[in-house]
Image: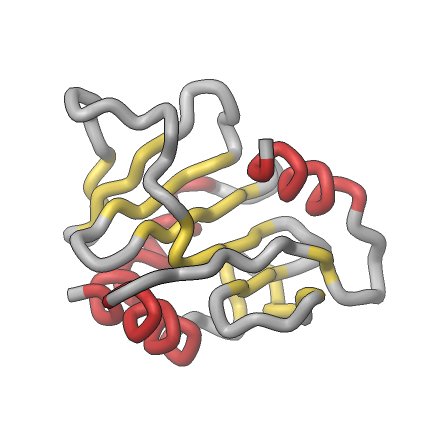
Length: 139
């Protein structure tokens, strides 16, 4: 249910102000990986500038007017089965949630990184641009 709430907040976020995104609470090795990832993320992503989120968190990044949002250190996707195929981009496996077509999760040994991408952006471009930093932070 929390994911749906986050997605609704992203859709309802207004222009010109910080975007409200619920920050995750990473545990164990994910804390260091997610902290490192924050410093590796691009200022611009698929043509959208990075913007502020509220509450501020080192585990959240937002681009544009809530067009793209990243949360690092989320729990394993509930809908992901052991037999699901992951799309591999630049050495990172991405799980596409079949019930929420704008939600993708990087599956690594260290942390799960959730990305919500508005349909106005090219999903493959966004995930490719994020795969390098995710790989460096979690590898």
